[in-house]
Image 1 (cartoon, rainbow, N blue to C red):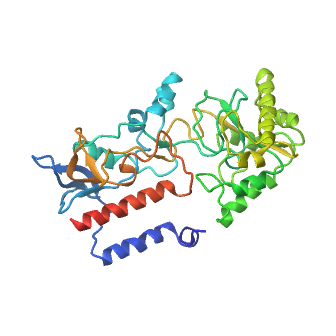
Image 2 (image 1 turned 120 degrees about the horizontal axis):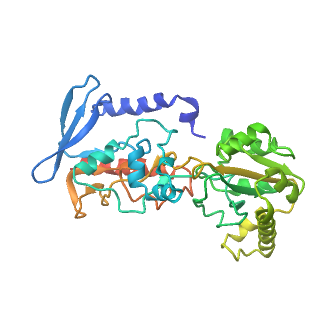
Image 3 (image 1 turned 45 degrees about the horizontal axis):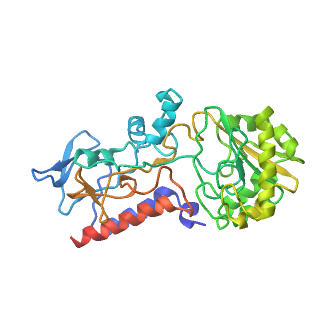
Length: 383
């Protein structure tokens, strides 16, 4: 477990690092908002103009360079529409750009200022694909059999994917009485299990231990329609039954041909698990061994896509597209040459993920940002 986040307030954790930086000679100007970079006649960045809390402008001159580490643009709807092609294309396919909205989960200050500063100084957004933090893992975790709104399996469940579906459609995750065996084997990842974190792991186990056979309760139906199924510690829209047929009845999301298709896919998946070879999507045989649907009780978690995913048509928890940079962190101009004096790291730097953020290990996004910032700081100190 992370002793800092569990024991101390986050603000106290930050203040420890701030105090250490000040002891080392750093100065902080937290009540100032960067407005634009100073650029000289040669195209080099020489500083930043900022506005203080009382509305006064202050010019900060750079001795070594300006480092853009100001976070993403998930709260800026115009930037989300303009930059993240995947989200815009989903909205265009549904005939309504108004479906795109700013994210509302991780703080309203992430307005893309750092990226705008870099563009105005001569840089550009990475060519693409452009990534964002989209849907999390459904149900109790990854690996279990997943079906789309047609009742069809659509990928290697352990590989992770973003599923584009019509508004109001469902994504179903299915598992049996052996779910704990598979869950304990899964690697920690975004919205996946973490057996080393006691409180989170206990919430995962409680998630299904409290589910009893029967249809969804009214509060579960509301969470399903709200797209909440699958959040850690949230019971979500999970059904339980003694047979697969009863489970499909309780979930009440497949009718007629889609129900027949779902039953056929479940039968097919069990055959592949028995054979030990996933002839359809190439899933690892070790995963097939622990995810067959053969022993009651059977479980099904249902998530509803109200506007194109659990977070709707937005950047979710963050937009991970950034400025094109070189290996040393320089922001690149339109000729792909470094802009003297301008650097970027974290979510202001591009080239981090392809299309959608995925986390085969826990902390891959935050770890990348911390590492990039650390390495950039070392390079600037050597100038």
